[in-house]
Length: 195
Ligand code: GDP
Image (cartoon, rainbow, N blue to C red):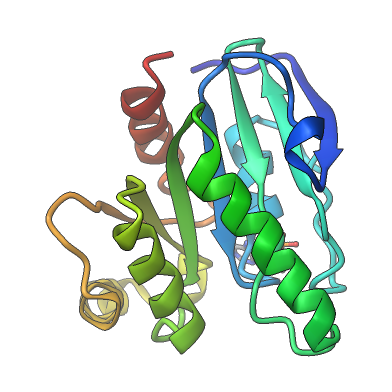
């Protein structure tokens, strides 16, 4: 999809703040600093629209980005951020769970993992959780430009094996710097949403 118009429609913490449209929605989840804002910016062809930050865990709301009045990208707060209090973490957990399990417009979730390393326990839990709720997932391994070309296959297998990916869940190696994987990610989004 060629993107020209994008708006941050709303930052929501409660279902009654979600957009009242029927556009299909794609959620983006992953640990803080994994490259979620960078992926979003590449998908919408902007340099710095979704705010990339060196302060992990700052986004504590569900951010709905209206893309061409056709679909929403929903930026879900990064998990695995140790510095927020346990109470706050539980509140995020509820907010995320409420959205992912109850939102009818949700067509799929992109789970981002750091392509340089093995997925963490948090990543594995998130994947299992998505499977448990039958939410279609795409796994994107980020920052792959930091991995030497001859090690890409090894990293791909490591992510595959550590998460225990099923046949329905594709895995795409991605670089926001090189825009590697951009078309493949869009292809999956288009298939899930029908846009
Ligand atoms: P978020 O917290 O998940 O939204 O992560 P950001 O998109 O803000 O990225 C965190 C850091 O990783 C920033 O310094 C980015 O420049 C860097 N980063 C993100 N994606 C890539 C990538 O594909 N390659 C490289 N080399 N760095 C990246």
